[in-house]
Amino acid sequence: MELAQSPQGTDQRLRGEGEAEGLTLGVEEEFLLVDPVTWQVTPLAEAVVEAVPAPLRRFVQRELLATQVEIATPICYDLPQLSDWVRRLRVTVAAAAERAGCRLVAAGTGLLKDPGVVPLTVGPRYAWIRDQFGALADVQGLCACHVHVGVSDRELAVQVSNHVRPWLPVLHAMSANSPYADGRETGYASWRSVLWTRRPTAGPPPWLQSAAHFDRTVDDLVESEVMLDQRMLFWYVRLSAVYPTIEFRVGDVCLSVDDTVLIAALSRALVRTAVRCIRAGCLAPDVDDQILSAAHWRAARFGLEGAGFDVAARRLRPSWDLVRALLEHVRPVLEEDGDMSTVQKLCAGLRNTGSGAHRQRGALIVGKDFRSVVHYLVGETLGSASDEKLGIDYEPVTERSRMSEPLL
Image: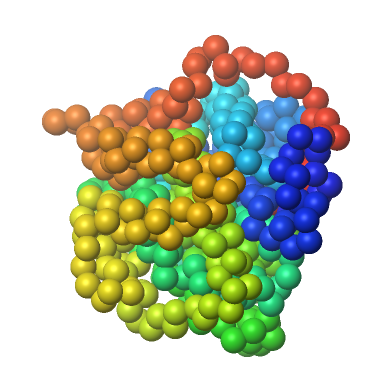
């Protein structure tokens, strides 16, 4: 994700020395593909990607399993631009899925009973994953949301990671969207994250001393053969292996566009707040790894609808109290960037509707199976996008919109 030249009308602070750090952002979202009759996952990723209009195909790619596709926005400079891109790409891929004979679903896990071994996407990388991890790859598809925030200085990015890691459980709870899996209620708000942490490099990041410390850790993990390369470092926040960004990887794919924009806005605000703290000489809190893991477990188990663990105060608190604490922490940068009113509105909407997990549970019709929930999710994935928008004309990708290659 390159820091491209600011297009006309973009925030002028990009021109100031050092101000670009933490300003740009982009989002990756993974989705399941389901059959419109059985509502079971279906391995049609190849057909869906091919059905995407050529001008936008570079923003869509295959994922680990043939039951998944991923969208990746270009670099964005403000929340309206990000919202427009996420909505446009969701509508585009949903239309492509219909042409390929399936539907697009924003859920962290496959809801219906596991159909058996799902085919992996063809390629040497995916074959290595199958050979190395065995049955860990035998899932219907685990779908996440990743947020990239531009930080070009690797030493600074490592320190940003240290500063934001205590707040990651709050984002974890806010994005929870996988209470059902394999035809059963899991009892968790984010079952995807529980399954994901079975991988040896998944979970909260350690406290890092420097970029050299990060590089040594990556080299040792590659040498141990628990990962093929840095792209398989699945920490909840990490330095990107490809772009000059810090990448948040803690959340389930969000049910709505608004939820995605909210998580992205707070991720960027955390980075910008951290950069200011670092430049002011503030040290990052060295939260114990085990305590942080416990906070993440509670976020996965109870989401927004229960109590989370405050790693600073070392006590349980209602999850929404932790959200309010996060908002206060990042308020100065939200107000300066003009994002405060938008974030407050999105938070109010999330408070009114509940998390994605809560909405999924509310969609389960008494006496019905989980197919009713899948049907609900198909509609909510597009949200306010009308059926007419599925037939939109796909305008060419201009030089102004071609700000980066898709985020990997």
